Image 1 (cartoon, protein in one colour):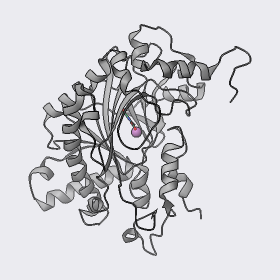
Image 2 (cartoon, protein in one colour):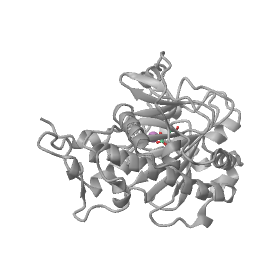
Image 3 (cartoon, helix red, strand yellow):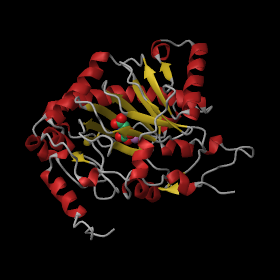
Image 4 (spheres, protein in one colour):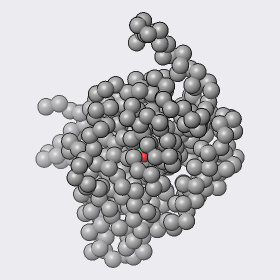
Length: 370
Ligand code: OGA
Ligand code: NI
């Protein structure tokens, strides 16, 4: 890419740097009252045209009621829920869990605390602002792929590694410290329940994923999508798939998330008290394609109120001894041969960190062609 646009004298790198060094984030830009967005946020016409296409039929992702799973041991009913979760993970890659056992007050407090962090003056947030995306610790940033992505997106994020090494709680911003710790605990309980159901749906022991350490390496990201004065020119988050096992997402009432279903982009309507769960690339691969890691994206927020979402990405913490992972051998048979080859830790990590989030996923790279 040319450093300088010869025709207009536009120096993209200089503008990116100035924005990054200001540490003000898009929330800062939005609060400053700008009426037009900096050029490096503007996406190419193809992307923008695609962002305008959302489903006209107002389908929503499946909603699954977990109440009887959390509270009882009724096995017939459990089988029904296993079927629902399996079907959702196979066809949508996404579902919305309700009655998951976490009190609404805990959900609300988490959203308020993350909002309160982002609402602080940017001078206060600046001491958490970082650019290097390291494993472990806490960072606040705008666009963690700012210098790698082709165009920037209209969101800021506070990120904290909650495991496998216990986070130093004092490293969390005080304004959301207790809430982040409490949310991590609650969300991990929900993730454990969901992983059990996903295991059963594959015919595995309920505790298999936990045993494989899929609950341990957790990254919590509190996103803020502030009001965007030109929402038709940019995006909230570029279309992508999540790399890990599963993601648990809590959002406030401001819409914007869309999920790809067939050729359509479906709006995810926030359901009060609901938690969105989706499968990541790692789960698609180890389930030998049974569960799907589906593309999703967020529209730039046209509402004056900020959209807040808190995601926790669940990843494995221990690789197998030989350093490889691939479709779980228990799921393979002569009728169901592996459709993906094994991949190494390094391949996985490089794909995770070495790209803008819009790049091709690992899944495509390791598909066995026949
Ligand atoms: C993500 C993501 C969606 C949202 O962080 O990977 O897809 O609604 N977020 O914030
Ligand atoms: Ni995502």
